[in-house]
Image (cartoon, rainbow, N blue to C red; front, top):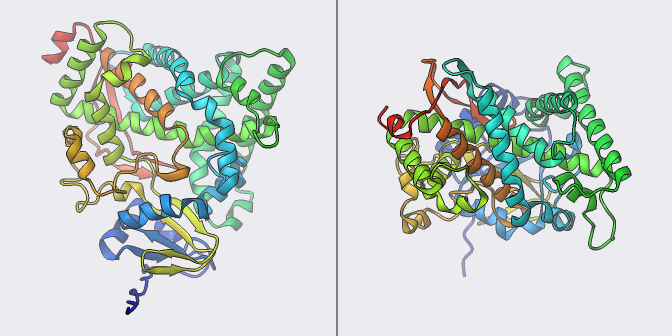
Length: 458
């Protein structure tokens, strides 16, 4: 049997000493990563840190191999390692057996029975947010969705036990952390040690979030109450092996990471979905008809979620066309075979969901918003395995996927029934990437819906 030597892995052009490809990533990270798919093959090497080799994995089969087949043997890589350094160790940043242990410990907080209890909180926060939007006045939709997502998360975690001033302060501090973590992860390590205003703001906000959570944990421990919220569940979560409960620092790390990994992504998906529903009248009418038929005028509940297939397709297509993830990393611990290539230990592996989901070889007419591409399950299943990864895959698949989908359906079902949006700016709404991929500027006027039949004729 003759062994075929694989072709050498190409190196992306444009690397400079000390900074590697950081300049291209800072200047236009999405454009740079997307260009790699068109210019190079299934693997291409870039430099994020001096002396560190990073391979961008671009073939769906190899991505699937990396996430599923090799998943248990790989470390999480630089992105998650930096997240752990900045926010603390958590189920999101842990790898190997440590990840498995943390996942088992936290799984009860994301169980179906618990999420069903969160829907009322999510709906109430959405109703409250909609109530503050002044009819006809211009609304920064993304900022409104960030606020709503933070409100839903904080109220779900703390069950409204924080006073209003503390709640606003926690939300503001979390916003600073979310907005700053993307740059901190991508920049060389030495830059975060420079006492720049950006670094000081980030550190101060992160420390303030920890202090708020520590205080809430201490009060809950002192009262001995089981409030039934996520904080209480985390406080009572027990490590099966060690029999120990989470410390206040560990709980704050989990909540910090949940806020960064979940809130910004939820806000961006909500924003994109509302943008696409607004600019596609036929899709808007179909969603409204479904909500009218299923809900018959009452508020959406947990039991309604699987009965809204049209809204589900809208969300699925939003997760495809406007995926919020632009660089997910892993790291080889030993020499590892990836397809025909033998990759040395210590190699960073990364893939871009945003670019993957827009590849014309994987999805016909990829830049067009087509929820009905998911209508035929046979067609949906025919998509290349590994081509659609809204929540990742394998043992490290997002632990909060069900929680996130519940947030999305609940918020959209509530907003769309009450509000009709109208664009107020002619500026192109384009994707930009920070910690996640989000819309650049999404300005629309919010109009209250009155008679549903009249609105469908609008």
